[in-house]
Image 1 (cartoon, rainbow, N blue to C red):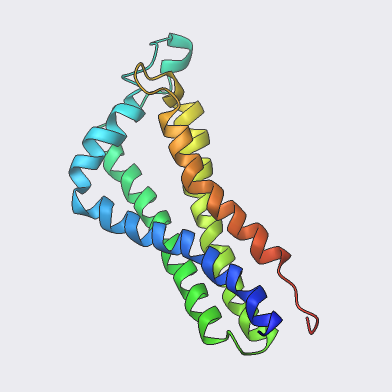
Image 2 (cartoon, helix red, strand yellow):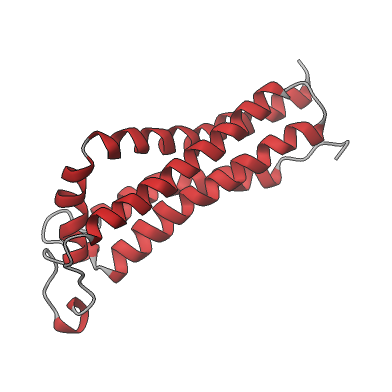
Amino acid sequence: MDEIIIKRFPCIIMSLFPALWGIFSLLNNTADFSGTAENAIRPLLAMSDTYGIPGQTWRAITASWVPYAGLAVITAMETLAGVLATIGFVKMVVNLRGSYAKFSSGKNWTILGACCAVAVWGIGFMVIAGDWFMAWETKENSLNTQLGALLYALPSMMCIVIMFSHRESDA
């Protein structure tokens, strides 16, 4: 077995996390865009399921167009994550037996995709939705937003670490 090829497989496999999740998110979000905006984004932004503490709820956004704009931004970032990481996946597969430089060009695309994924799921959902819009205060399933986002963000974070830690002797 070729050691270089074996060491490249984790990069290729990890690239599928942001690639597939990003593409599947596009498909899921657009399957019922309006329903998702109304039933998931609107209550979160309106902070309608929080403890109602005025020192926090001043942040609530109730303008009717904002959930749609927010979901459009989320979908765009998830799609970008998926597209960039998919380009990286394809480049790495095509260059599996190629030079380190050519294989690394795929890693770079994957890193960009994974960064988009971390931005939307880590910063967007865990930090902004979770702490700014107080999603952790929901009366049912508190922390559901943040823990769900962590499940999405963590593999993309690990993907970035694996891409950066992968080195070869001809590098």
